[in-house]
Image (cartoon, helix red, strand yellow):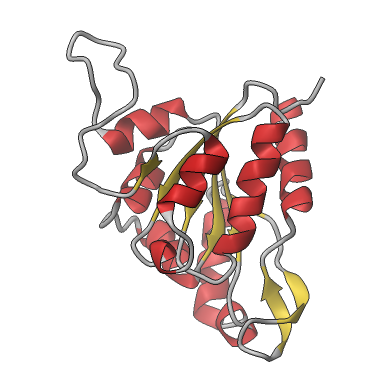
Length: 190
């Protein structure tokens, strides 16, 4: 039996070319029995459509900070506010791809879209899978933010090295879906 069967994974997809890998990851997690809900940023929707993630996850995709669709409520109102209900749903909150923007927002407690507000509300383990240009990833300010988040208990899956979308070679490729799934199995299996 998979360690991911019936485990609740909230996947935050931020805007980068690696969003296509997040689609493959969604498919893999669902095949392993995980219950996946997806939040997409506005920039992520420039790379992959919400319909792709809705189809792969089997659930509507959350994109709007002020949508009041909510997951089934625990109380009498019949709905809950998305960023709170999604945070409550999650056993793990995975941000993949995690751009410099979303990492910086998390470190600064900036909550200006659905992904960042849900992130601030999350009480479960949070895992970032960074994906960006090498120069961005190696920027000392970003590295300080990553170190700060790690010290606060946030987890990171190191990006790989290779040819990047920009044509340069270096560190910054989002980890492969299987590597991320293995990390989640280990995290949730314990």
